[in-house]
Length: 216
Image 1 (cartoon, rainbow, N blue to C red):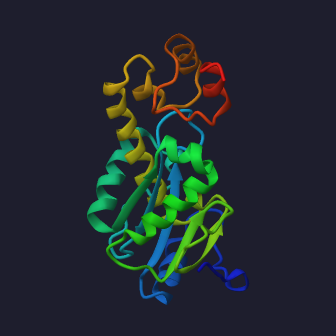
Image 2: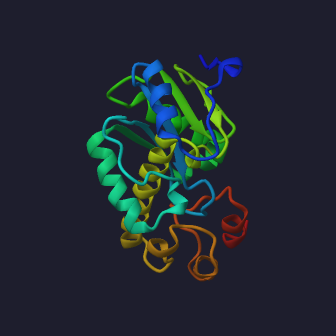
């Protein structure tokens, strides 16, 4: 059952404040979990979510919203996060996205990421406006949380790097679409490939540009 703590939401500034976040984490025995996703918008590939409980005594330097970081910096921080924190990633396939819709598929994957952590969190911070239905822990949604909260920023990095690696691997199985370059987003190169080659099982048929390319 989702627990609403709207009257007791933790305060966060517009940019990460390590001292404040350490204080918040301490109030939950250090078990403060950040959750984020990567890949809600692309036409192809899964949506990937991640849940991260940071060790606030071993914070990687430079944690920030993954979109603000270079690929090299994300890769560096990813390795530091997975070796110093509790981390779990979960994804929803294009078929699941088509069946449930992208919002529901994302929120469901977020719950699976939290449930998959080796260490059970006491409070969960989710990037965006929604607390996923079915989340067992109390928590709150945090708009632009990946730029305001270190544990959410860490989750955004894990989700982004994990998904990028999946799309690079997927390119080997369905060449010709440029998935390793654009990661499935709706860039002109992808649109041209769709018109020429048609959709693959890795495309999201519920997304209008893919559906139109299939002639539906």
